[in-house]
Length: 161
Image (cartoon, rainbow, N blue to C red):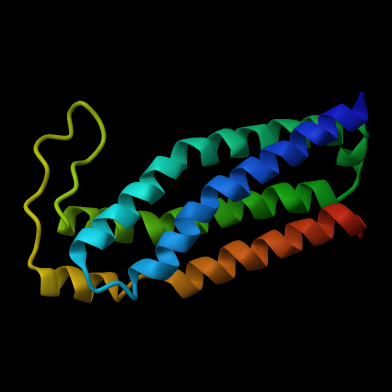
């Protein structure tokens, strides 16, 4: 049974990374883009990937915690370190990315999700949108996300403590 639980964890990780990849590509491309319409399309693609990414994250967490309980690993430090690091990465990336990409979505005139969001904001000028897109925090996001993922993989594979 343990192997099936680990498989659930791995499938969740793959779904999360695959879906989140759309946001990663968007973050890398948007800072170089010079066409506000293409910036808006990249933002829409990233928004569409959020739901599947969260489903993958949920499967990853459920499978990982269940596997650690089933395998008796919570007596060791590495699962706690991996879980804590995942939480820290999520908080850091959310704090860095959310405000910026919400501001950029407003700049291109994208409607906010939700029933009470009101009318879409008025789009800024092309020059203002391009200038804002050029300030994308892609490097800190990439460093936190990729670096954190490598450390979590190291913890899971080598189980150092």
